[in-house]
Amino acid sequence: MIVWEDLVSACRLALDVEAVPENFQSFNLHSASPHGKYSTDKAQRILGYAPAVRLGEFYKRQPS
Image (cartoon, rainbow, N blue to C red; front, top):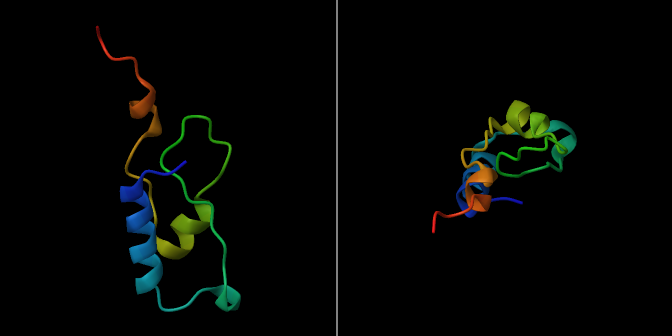
């Protein structure tokens, strides 16, 4: 899952990068997820992407 602010950031970084290895790359993009199942290491290394929004914030119970 990705929050649109993080997706916009990743797309902007992709537009600004001069080149990628082999002229094509696919990336795992997501907002900061607590389970760590998917790695954004390649997006961080090539694009400089770092998720800013923590998904856990959207799953907190609201006080009643």
